[in-house]
Image (cartoon, rainbow, N blue to C red; front, side, top):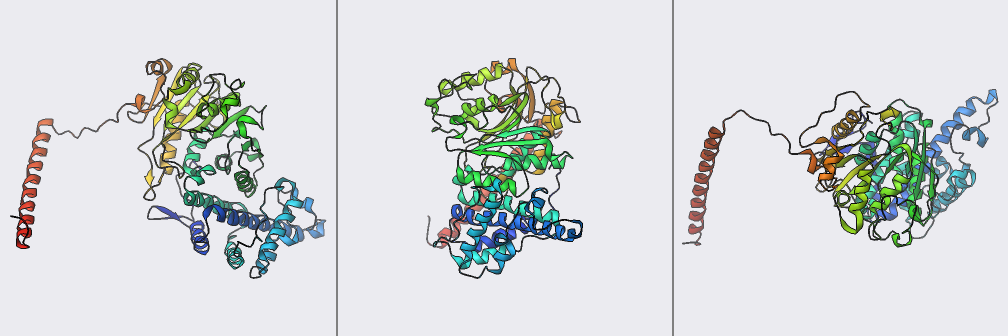
Length: 527
């Protein structure tokens, strides 16, 4: 993930990635163009998952059949569970569904298959939808979608089971978020933002926690980070919570399609009112909580044990989330999360006092101002907070010991980074992500390279200086202006040249105006 290389299957066309995932999306989108994205999402994503579990099962089935002479039993469910492969009963196997894709009963056959998989795999209980037979769902198009998804599964076993299907699932999640706009942002954080968080936190070993996990993108990228840096997936334990049941199902599927074992809890009350991991102390907290949530029920939690730095306002959950994250951090843990820019400077309803207390406790490790237009769900400018429980002995990249940064905070202004991928949406490039992460890790001392302040981009600031700015944490206040390169031309000479150019432009403008007026007079207009 740290590499700046693009996947081999992708090329650039008009600034957007075009590859197998995009081709499949375009075909599916055309097929279901009259269906609302919010509804279609719950048709296509579970089918992609079903294709995944069936592919993985069939491959394991063939391997076991080849070893039957050595006592392997391809019809023993325990053989599959031992290899972290879901047991798929005959009625749920993709070959059976594809063979019946043109039948009017295809909806019921899919429902029966989903129910059978849940029955035989306890970890999927309550996760899979079973409403494909509903009358409102066009069965001819459903069958065509089954045929289309059947084209996924190119390449060798590893690529088919994890890479291709995982990429398609992730790509579709992003496309649905874009199609749904603000509503879509409730379950999806843009991949480039997740990658910045993961690259900076570097969750190489330990417990990773997201108490508002959406569709699980933070966890997927965390596991990718471990794989990319030569670690062992088993060294990372994943915990999450989600209050929206539909989104929780998406997360469970997103993780299962990659074989990621995770403890993801669901309850309607949510993390504030029914903390499902009450005793968890995480090494890494990584999250994108709802921005400026005014309906979080804070008036019922005024005396909560989590509010060690001040009672958060009932009308805005930002600092309730911040303190919830801190509450769940281990003594050497670190948290990275997204918040609206207002959290860095707001003085309303006691928020300034809470932020002051957190700064004075020396918990603020790094602040990153992000460029606008990164999110599908909001135009509100956002920032990244990084809080460290112990700046002297805390965790660094890959679990390394970091440099003692007590009494210091790094400010990064990344607002000028990124590039537009369409008229309204910006993304951070691989090079942007690498620059942000490497600056942070060089400052922490857990990576090669010496840290240096860069005017307009990054600066290490003492707590005393933050006090002088009334504990406002906006990076632009601290990093200064970007240095302007001196072109060597003396000021007087430059002004004479610029004035001469301006005079020439005035003359050309006057000449153009004269020609336009003459044309108007020839048409009978003007004096």
